[in-house]
Image 1: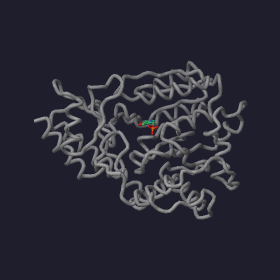
Image 2: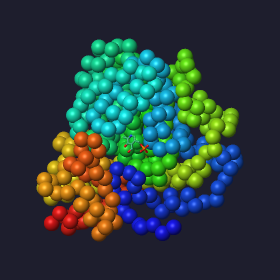
Image 3: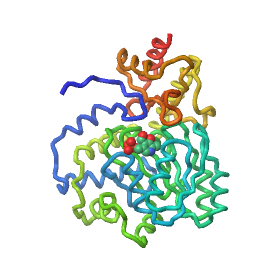
Image 4: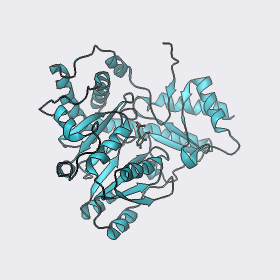
Length: 366
Ligand code: PLP
């Protein structure tokens, strides 16, 4: 196998630390080997650290971020449940789709792409539907670069005694997720973004309240592979076999989380913020326009920038790859051909990449 070496600066996957790659080449252990089981226990603690939670049910599902999304919805939602979903980008749309496939009554709260969902919108919807069981939001909308504030909305959701579901696929270990502080009941992520591992696992955490909802379901969880009532028994004391754990991916995630611990979560957030804002300042100095106008709603780890008039999207991305080995993302849905998405996540969030990308883009545009 002879593969090119790229600089991955799109919406994911991103480059990973050499220690993470080295971890994946370690010899396999059996998935019930005591050494491996000890690693899983320690990993649950490491995941609690990045989610900033004490939730007992905190583990990594086999599968990418979408498996995390499915896990949360398939385990908690039952037919007829009312679910309010913030829809201001592709991933909010996907959450609404997943919930509706489970027979939920989905109440979409729409907002223009590039803007966050306002607490008043959620409050209005909850006032009109006080029997709502779940409110679901995307914390970091990868399709638009919007940083969704959670503070006020979490208070509103709590006041109405609904459960808060948060998609943290692009936010975990990039900006503070703070599951316990925000009283988030169910949160899921992926490994290939700010967490700094290859794609393949989906960290998930459920609050005790969400765990109770799961235990009190009227119907069986309608998906065998993602059924947390069984998977929790493998990650817990019983160690019942459910499916073969993806051993090498667990090594990779373990090492990526160890790197985060070593750097310290607050330093990790500061690094993402510094590099993201530096990139955005550089792009604006080149005359480019941000999709998210207000800086407080703009993610540092994923920047969506409008493609200037007269510039060919695919041509520029092709030249970035050809001349510099840099990969960035194009726009999704209504942003196709209009927006570029530049990721500075995990190991990829570095000064070196900020400068490399700005210089490369300037070279190509001029
Ligand atoms: N949610 C968000 C916010 C995402 O950005 C993504 C992927 O980019 C997903 C969910 C789905 O994750 P995956 O592609 O790893 O299945």
